[in-house]
Image (tube, rainbow, N blue to C red; front, side):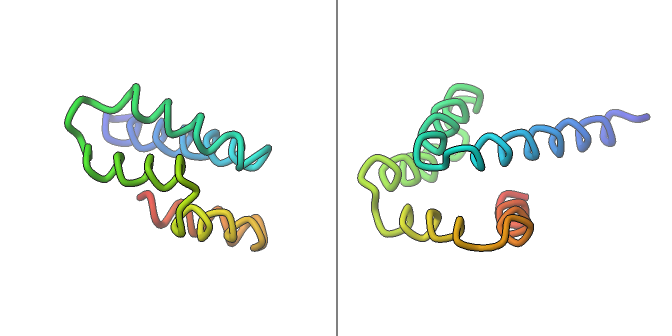
Length: 87
């Protein structure tokens, strides 16, 4: 196994674990997951995008409402949407 395929496997595993975590209680776990992302991302990486996401989460803005509405979808469809959006 080369480094690239190992990296891809680790990313997929992490994504699946994050989605499982969110499924348990999205209202509570979305802010917690965002805190983790902020801690592990290198400083300056996508800073303005993460700030915007954080504001939407904290203020329960319209984009946050859209994310929460995704939980009305079938779990398989929702996970595919999240995976395609992130990757």
